[in-house]
Image (cartoon, rainbow, N blue to C red; front, side, top):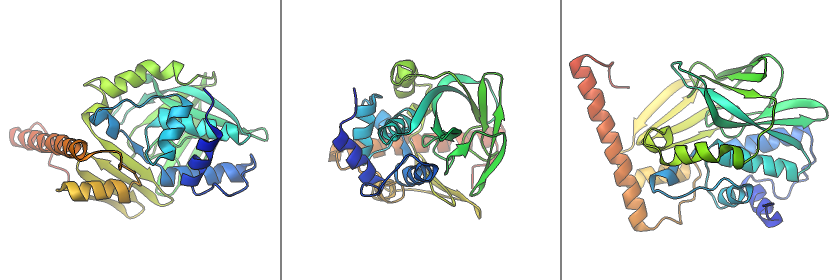
Length: 293
């Protein structure tokens, strides 16, 4: 279903660009991309309530316009619709992800976008959390952005994007063939949202990129990664936790009633304490390294 034009206005207003001329140029693409990753967080809070997060473009655009975030299917899905609305030529692609530490490529776990601007193609991806700040020209080689270096490599079927070694995942590969949202991602989205094996179900996360680095919340642990290195602190109260979600990650959670907010914090804190206990046990028995500092 096509998005309501009024929702595009609200979406652009959240990006701080509602009253700007936005011709389909590389300058506009860069401005939109930067505003998106700076203002709209990568997050999975609704999976912990739990509450459905539909993938149709209309649903995602409305969601973002109202102050929430999402992961790649929501963020890149909405962004693709916005770019198309503004006159850009956009293609969506199924991408296979390899997580940090190795392992197999997991097919269909990511939605990637390419944008044709005057015959030059760019990777545009606002759904990576600690990923790119600017769109990347589809040219082989390293690309430095802030504290991170990303690498693009041609494959037999398309392209491989490799994250900085300190990133939240190792790489993803996407074919030149195009994909459709939500149809081609509905099954894996359902798994992400409901499976006990899903990382989004196991750990509540929020991430937001800026020009100099990234802020990352995993459960009750808030980290900052930038050129100065990494900092980390634990959040001990619900008041500070919700203030962090609003202040650091720009999330509007005003639609959550008191009971839901209490449930979400209690569940997240219990998972954090279980993680701490498991880490201590691993150290005691010699099966794991020290607790993170």
